[in-house]
Image (cartoon, rainbow, N blue to C red; front, side, top):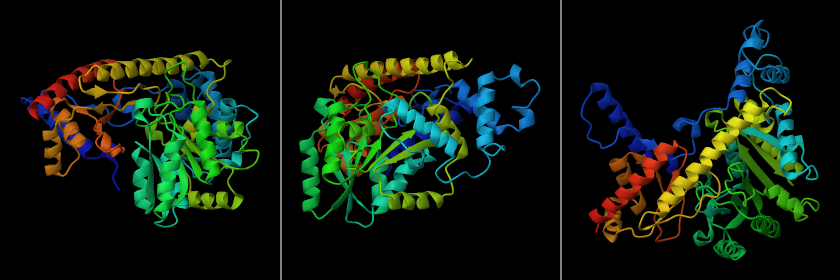
Length: 476
């Protein structure tokens, strides 16, 4: 298995970062033309300067503090807002009174799962059924995804349909579990949309090759593409999965990262309901969300959930057994999931400041997405589809020099890995080669986040432009 977002280029970036720190501590002249590494390789917002939201951290602090130092301290009202104190009291009762240090139920604390249910009803409408027993809290979305893939891949004939390009957790996990990757291509020229004809082609080819295709992965909004799929497209996917009896894995962790007013996030569960598939129990759907993305950016908390829809009771019991083998997900992560799903109410003292913090982060992400997207498209030889959502741009390098392609072959690396290493060594910008996500043969490019500061992203775009000109001249 390979996991590109922490692969070859990032290892090199960490080595250079250590060298820069050593040079700076000794006051030595640097051999590099930059003073720091700008990490744009991974969607890890707080590592590159995004500030945590205040109210959730206040509640978590009170949960973890001993009562006499926290919720029962005589001066606590002068230190924390009343709504944070009240929420921490409620959560502590739900935790058994002793904070977050004990194991929980293997599905997660019921009170928190009820908050997820309320969140889903607010998102999809109260007419769309949900059940607290169908919610599994997990260590981020990734742990739940891996558990479900573990249950699906019975042998080396089992295939999982994954988008190309896709987030490498899917390709890496399928490889690790011994299954078959069944790729379907997204249409770059059509804002990375997908077509039913391509899905049917991919499935037919896999079946003809003897693969038992058991599941389908949809990432919306897209990683690494930044695409936001239309309502019609999502409905086409749920119908396709129902028609071919494929378990649908709906990776929806970027559902709050949608930057254009004309684009709306439309969940697979709502689509299944609108298409009549829930009423007839005609689809098996697992959907995922996480505290790591959106405007929370709490990656280190490892909070997330999986909702199961349309699964047989025996299958849910097997998934519960699998979750039980790990005892439970991190309780701090469960707390953060609850706080993401149910924030302060409009009548609470923290409501306005909490909403303003979220809006400020969202607006800055939206601004940075435009800076990077416009900047990449201004580079001669680059083309980049608009970042409608998520946290990434995925440009194509349309004029990769043949000499660079040949040199990469000699080094036994991909051409875009050669390019990304050159970009890192010349500018200090760390990106991920597009080959790590999958792409059509003959395409080259990389994925970059737009999470670093607006100043860093403006610098990065200009540095990328200068580097590309230099790289093409070097390998002309």
